[in-house]
Image (tube, rainbow, N blue to C red; front, side, top):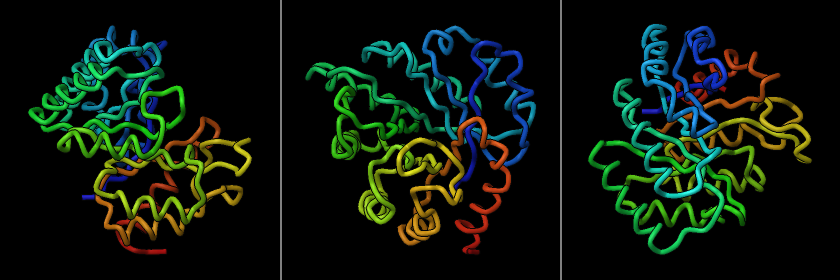
Length: 252
């Protein structure tokens, strides 16, 4: 079933204010961490209790990426992430592929680790940030990893970071919809001077009317997360409503 929500960044410098940041009191959220050291140190209760108290539903947990340099470090982070989502009746994690190369031994370890995810009925979605410095260097690398993981690994498609035009995005979604579990939605200007602006912003490079129709036609039933830069988050509420009308009720 399709899930629609928005991103809430965890206040790593002051975890005590997390509950106050859950402002919309509607829909589902993706909670994002940035720093691995903070994520590993913060008590699980500081993450779980505010969400449960405010009766906000967790759509997915975005694992930290700053400070992750190896498969072993990553596995430690994922295991804590599994403990968190289990308490919140969620089964989806999102992660950045870290910078650096993977040895054959590293890749084998990732494949072995995928069995733990399957046993936990969890899915780990790799966010599409393909570049030559990361171990997933191209979009084809993402699809291949999904194919080899027996359903444990999936893709988190971050549309604003794609070097594609609207029609190419739609074609890619339709070709690979079975491997896409999460979509981060925001827009950008064509020159990238403005990133993560609202999806319906007239300055946007992507035509989200076309993209949303493509999602409907592809029968996408994963998670859609609005992900806006700080100055644009006031648009979350209205855009959540428009997304629900379009994706759930077919209202243009």
